[in-house]
Length: 294
Image (cartoon, rainbow, N blue to C red; front, side, top):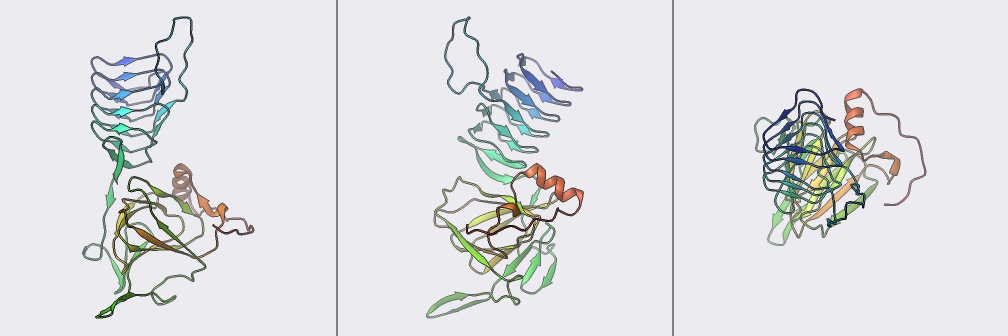
């Protein structure tokens, strides 16, 4: 099935069990095999390669073959020239796969991936605010509002003398909520992505105690990326903000302070559901439930 107003260039091959949405562009030399879905407004660059068999073998004509799982490229995603997409993956909406990348795992919405194997290097249309940037609005001397609604970057107190360095935070003075739980993330392989969720009610405050990492924030309309590379920098992530942690240095140790005990029902783990809630009005009330430790 091929949708309306598509741009299909020379030398493109389209097999049978294929779904192509509206306004899709397929540049020269692209081959779309059985088991592949391209949603609307997808761009596929020249000679990009899709695969649909994780264990390809020559088979006799009598042996029927079916793809093990569909490969889905979501709306408005772009795939660069000569990229290779392994079978059964989902390429997230509005994401970008760089030229020549070899994609071996799902690509999150809005992510930019490059390399072999492909790794996330950034997010589309994302600002990179910091204390030094003049366009980031200041609400008090020790913290700055970000573009993402409700999120703030905090400069924590810092004391240094011949005996060493010390940074601290006091509830009500430097920390914007009462802390009821903490957890520490460390020993993360640099290619791994953590987070990828939002909360209905929970506030979090993030401080990278050692090394560095990046946190991408998304309120359903606007995106920020903040570099956490000092114990003197804290990031307040309020409810209904999608967060992704990545770019961990090998020695990174991220402290997360939380406003409540662990509650599985407070998590929003599907990005499409999050965007629908964020754009459609107040999030539903989270039902009371017995808490459990994380």
